[in-house]
Length: 189
Ligand SMILES: [Zn+2]
Ligand SMILES: [Zn+2]
Image (tube, rainbow, N blue to C red; front, side, top):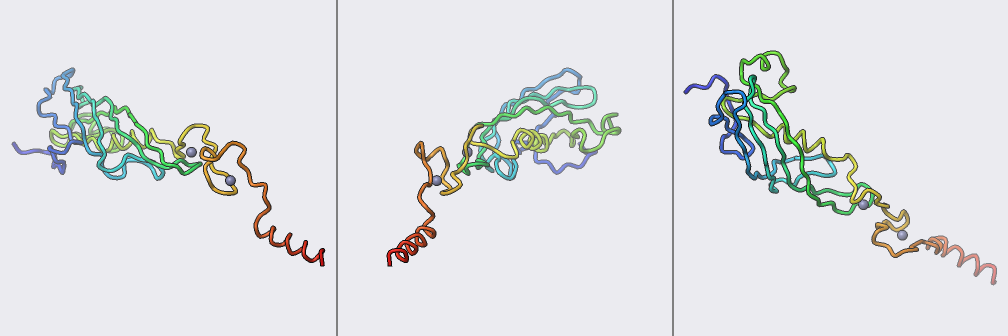
């Protein structure tokens, strides 16, 4: 069968959903439970899902009059650096996905912009854009290892969490110490 919409999507890709078994009758449902390797650059500058790490998808595709509604969750882990103490953050993440993919030539297709709703490409759905949006929106611009992370000691740069209680730098700066020594010598002479 000749497809009207050209598609660049690979139906074997785990982030591509195939709707050919989903009846185009509003209310028809199909569950999609699978794992997928995380695509590149899934995150923000300081934190993100490592490329190739496992994402678990629990989704359902639902036929609606204008297209296919995809909803559910994607979970995996995010790795990054604490914005205060620079220690590694490695924690689980779960995001909600809900996105309408409009049928070609449906009213929705013809009355919305490309970036407002997704589009079916033939029978295929590209999950990557909504996944990317959901993950990026869920991540903080300044990730923290814990909410009240005290950061680093400004004098030695060691995370406060790793320093003994009462840590401080009472000693005079070594450069001043040398001067003090000189002054002392001068006075003694
Ligand atoms: Zn921290
Ligand atoms: Zn210190």
